[in-house]
Image (cartoon, rainbow, N blue to C red):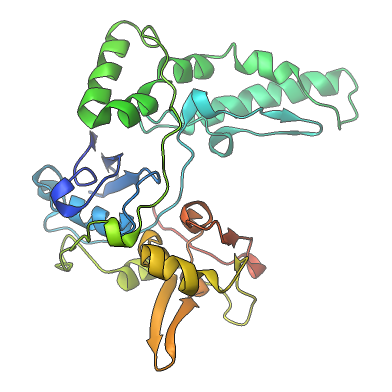
Length: 321
């Protein structure tokens, strides 16, 4: 198991201004899982998370594990990584918000299955107690909150709550040093850091650095079409597009001149294209390629895209992921 952070997202020479980290895990049958987490707070509209990932695999630390291998799967998704600082109110009348949907991921460790499962266990106990009291359902299970905040999972998230804000405030090296000292003292001992009001708006394209990504070599790095093919994504082509535009004019009239339409790059499977035609550019949505990562719903600078559930249960069918 190998974890890392910084490069290539902090490579200023290439125009990168982002934060994030990567992981490599060994699996059964000589399989290796490698991935890059890109903080969607990046400001350069030319940054492409997909292409940053392709660059990452050429790093000597990862290349030595990947050379000579065969790519067998590909996928992507947005994750909630704010941890304890960003957990919402998890109870409401008749329902509980749990696990990764609530944001129980320990981002410092890039691990979240154990904390998500613990939130589910605490929820099951809270529901069981309510049923034992002849609760017919519908009321708010406030006892869950106290039980959750008494659990080891909550304590773990509290101990790592300053990791993200430290990296955002002091950079990869400075933030990493702050967190190292914090953990050395026992976790959560240094003053708790919170993200101040950072400006996460995209920089206008005219002021941003273009990033010249190298062409994929077909061995370690690959293109989007062949990658989405490996995700086994399928949507019936005659169904309504599940990627809704509030204002269909915005991509071409606003996002293209201001930000070089970043949807072309932040989407990891090429769903969004700007097609040049004789009468001008046209915004095209290839919704059949969508792997439901929901990045567009988050990163669109005009907040003009809404992901809704597609008809027929379509989407990616990931093997071994």
